[in-house]
Image 1 (spheres, rainbow, N blue to C red):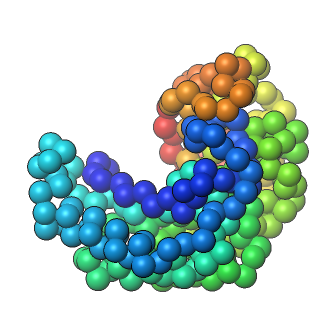
Image 2: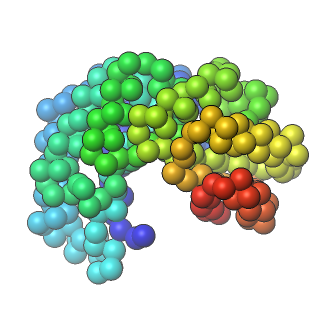
Length: 257
């Protein structure tokens, strides 16, 4: 579906609790989202939505007629959004404003997260609020091995803890798994990683974890991290072959290459 995707960046300080080697955020640093200015958020969002729905936004940017629709509002940005101290309140405010503007429920409400903080009460409250506005979580999982998580994400979080948070996410709000696969040092997609993923997906079925979709993709633009010269997009054939294996486990899989 084409259309306008409106991104809301909680991490204006370029701070994240992970450092993914494919990240395109400049001057990325380890940290959390800064304090939210709720008055400014409300003012800017109301102004922008009014400009899109009632103003000449589409004309100014020469948007094709068939794409003049708000596809989604996505909480994403330059770091981990759930690290915002008042995360739940921000999710609620955005939902309220978008509903009053007539954007929801027709458009999607999306949270893009690495899922590392979902065990926190405030984040869980935010997911419940997200669900109340018909929203969904895109939960990052780029590796099913401890070694892969350390290499790709520098996460410091175990696979066991990530799985627990994924189960929590799926129980609180419709959840899609978002997996970025890259070719690092010309190693491609190893059998070890592939089999670990398939074992994980089998385990999720046994645990009755309801995933709306598995979103497989690879990098489309250069990384801005030190590892950039060592990273290449994973071959499309490899992505599609892996997707076919996952579908055999009765999952919906979408591939973007």
